[in-house]
Length: 312
Image (tube, helix red, strand yellow):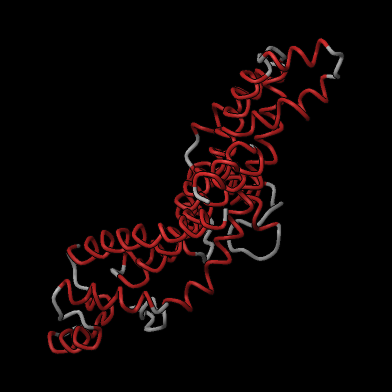
């Protein structure tokens, strides 16, 4: 298992390198001059050349890329073109806010999606099951930015119950977490329901019922463990999707996080900040996928034996 974890961590290196190369190339060939944003009204040709020399922007493409990768290997994300501050400091200051929003959205997804999906799967023809399916369809259909604006209008403007922007205290996380997690909660709920419907029709479930095992114990001890495998897969995939959706969420709710920093950096052609944000997000997605694989091994002993036997 340890060898498997080390192997997966090493596999992250070429993925991050490829991501860095693609983003660096896109930012390099994007029309516009970052020095024009840096200098603003004080822009002149002489000042632009001076800034390019200071930042190394006058060098060829591959020279700039190799220099950036060399600094990245040493843990240096470079200096922001706009703030002239280390990108690592910006990420340290903003990533915790992004983590809070994503964690809150994931908690919302799992805490509601899994129980509702289990109930709908065990009682598929009940009224509540039909209602939850309609809610799930609505959740999948609602765009993040539109739902976020509706939540602000209702709970902040009309009712005044919750703050509409910023991230100070638990109450400020409620609306962003719901807006970000509603779509993915519906996916988890539908996946759990479908998986439960399939599992409860298996022969070992019918055998447990014939032995007189209660419905609650059948669901908790027999069906749920096997039905959770597809759900865990969806949860792992949703982490990457949540990191993508957090860009819109932080923009709508004016949260100073990594997603909002990414949008601002793209608008300003601040390549080091853009790369720093995307590298951190890529690492988070890779680590979350590794955690999901380890959870697989915990739930299913056969998978654990494959890891230890096939790679040990």
